[in-house]
Amino acid sequence: MPDVIGARRSFIAGRWVDGDVPFSVTNPADELQVCELPTTPPAEVRRAIGEARRSFDEGVWADRPAGQRARVVCTFLDHLESMRDELVATMVAEAGQPTWFAETTQLDTGLAIAHATIDLYLSMTHEEANSVPVDELVRNRVALSVRRHEPVGVVTAITPYNAALLMALQKITPALMAGNSVIVRPSPLTPLSSLALGSAAEAAGLPPGVLSVVVEDGAAGAELLTSDPGVDLVSFTGSTAVGRQILVQTAPTVKRVALELGGKSAQIYLPDALGRVGAGAAAVVAATAGQACVAATRMLVPQESKEEVLATVSAAYSALKVGPPTEPGTHLGPVITARQRDRCERFVALAQEHGGKVVVGGGRPAGLNRGYYFEPTVLDVPDNANPAAREEIFGPVLTVIGYQNIDDAVRIANDSSYGLSAQVYSADVAAATAVARRIRSGAVNVNTSLFSAYAPSGGYKQSGLGRERGTEGIRAFQEIKHMAIGELAR
Image 1: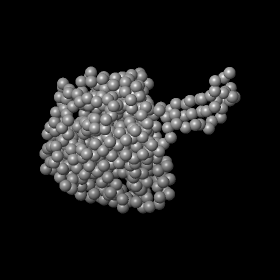
Image 2 (image 1 turned 30 degrees about the vertical axis):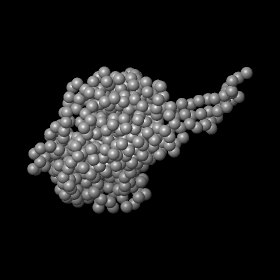
Image 3 (image 1 turned 135 degrees about the vertical axis):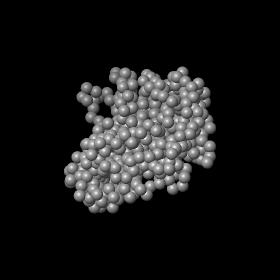
Image 4 (image 1 turned 90 degrees about the vertical axis):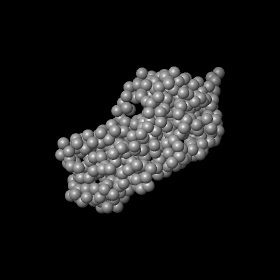
């Protein structure tokens, strides 16, 4: 296997910076240390903010024509592609993801989304004349009404552990294309792959201060990056609990926020689609071990067919291979930490205490004595009030819930503090689409799925604020300015 990324320093405003307090990055597949990484000193975090502020205010990047910015960002992405082997090995080691997932989803899809985002940005209008009625008071003085979409300024991009590179590219690309300066702060659990962003910025010739990468073991740097007046927008992907903290930290300076938070997504099967439940169950846990905010961990099926469904999904889970992510044929590796594995165990116990039953899985796989592995688990729960159906577990745990009729299925799906994603399956596309329209969720997939630079994602309720990807995701990194232009009165 290729070596993991060798540059073990933060990238601050065009310079590689040594830290003074080391912390360990652990491979969740074998519990061994991948490497030690020095924490970005607080003074350097402040310098990253100051230099980002300077670079933006001086217009060294924002004032360049969009075509020029696009060429530089494409070179940035090409450099990441040139690091393919090193990046894939790094993502496998730090996150415990199967090799095929790290390569095809994180790297290939991440780069494809980024390139398509560049094309989308260039196709959009960022200044246009308005056709608006003019008030009587100014009718004779206004010659032109113009709407401009301008960069918001300095952006903090805080990324999660489960898809560090993919999520970083999803934030960085539209932010840079819009002309912003960006500071990336990856999860302390998976910081290594994000160091490649500094190397790419250097190779592409991004002006100093336009992109920095801050790494840390705790949250002090992140708190500074969300509270400092020099930052204009915080884009965060992660848990709802941390999202709430970010809202508190950004409130005193009234920053813009874009939050993609937790989920407890439902997958609803109409009676004619039960042949699809095995594949739907496998999709929840394969590759990510259930560590995805959009994972549809609540399976809703007709009550009269529940036993049949439980048998099918149990067989599907029993066929999945759990093991080291570097082994061929592995479907899911470990969860990220021992604490996360403990969380899975705790919710399985809570489910049982509240009337649920473990149909398959429910514990640590036999023969895997090292690594934070947890079996793909199917829980038969009596209703949506069960703790395993209410809380985001973030592990390979699926709850199966019976519904009485379509209205009941919609009620159950919407009975959640989350609203990030949902799925509806039926051979009757019109009927499934009618159900989808009633789901309170930022995305609903009917018989298929789509992950595209041209389609937005984001949450209702406590699943977040704002959107990523699509035109809405680009506009999230822009301010709207209206200009009324007229001749000087004589």
